[in-house]
Length: 291
Ligand SMILES: C[S@@+](CC[C@H](N)C(=O)[O-])C[C@H]1O[C@@H](n2cnc3c(N)ncnc32)[C@H](O)[C@@H]1O
Image (cartoon, rainbow, N blue to C red; front, side):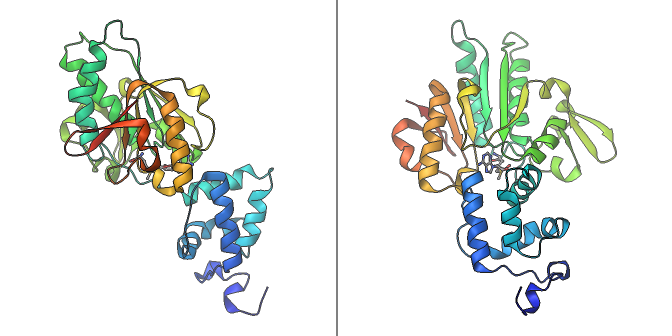
C-alpha cells in the first residue's frame, strides 16, 4: 500500500476509490476471459462505481485483491456477484416494437401454417429480467386468441442469461411500478398481469409457463439447447470483441432451424457473420433469416 490517501484501507467507504491501472488491466482481462465482456479503456470509473459494495463486503482494499479472490476456483459466489455487478441489465417490454409486430404479423402465421408444424421454439439469448421472453409469450398468447384458439400452437421460449441473480428475479415474473411503466399498454397490463400487492404486478401463469429460464454464458456450448425457429439476441453483442461476436453468431446460426429468424438489437449488425443470414427489411428494423 502506498501513502496515497486514495489507497487508504477505508478509501472506498469514503467514496474515493481509485483504481490503479495495472489492477484495472488485470480485472479487465479477467472479465473478458470469463464473461466475454470487453470493457475497453478508461472504464475505471464504471468499475469503481459498480463493485464498490463488493470491495467493502469482502474487505478488499484494492481491485487487485478482488481479482485474485475471484480467480480462485473455490470463490464461485464472489465471481458471480462481480459478473452480476458488471453486466448491464437494461431492458423493457416490447423493446423497439418492430420485432414483436413482425412476429405477430408474419412469423407466427407462417410457422402456424406449416403443414405438420410441431412446437415453435424461441430463444431469448440474453433475457435479463425477463421482459423480452415474456413479451414474446404475450404475442404468442395474443396470436392464439386472435385465431379463437384454432391455432393452439405449442410454443416454448428458452430464456438464458449469464447473470444468475437476474434470472432468479426473471423467473418470479414480478415487477414494480417503474418496470411495468416501460413499454406495456394498459390492455396488456390488464390481460397478462395479476396485481397481488400495491407495488407488484406478476405475469400471469399462462404466460410464464411457456418460458424456461436457464443460466448460460454465450461463450459456452449451445449443444444442449436444441433447435430454434426464432432467436432474440438483442443488446448483448455490443459487449463483445468482433472475433467473439462472429463466433457467437456462427454458433447461434448452428442452433437455428433452416429459414429461422434472428433479431438483433436495433443498433446492432451481423458484422463478420453477414454471410450466414439473409437480411429482411421489416421497416422499421431488420430481421435476419438463417441461410
Ligand atoms: C442490456 S441487457 C439486454 C436484455 C434484452 N435482450 C433486451 O434487449 O432488452 C444485456 C444482458 O446480457 C447479459 N450478458 C452479458 N454478458 C453475457 C454473456 N457472456 N452471456 C450471456 N449473457 C450475457 C447481461 O447479464 C444482461 O442481462
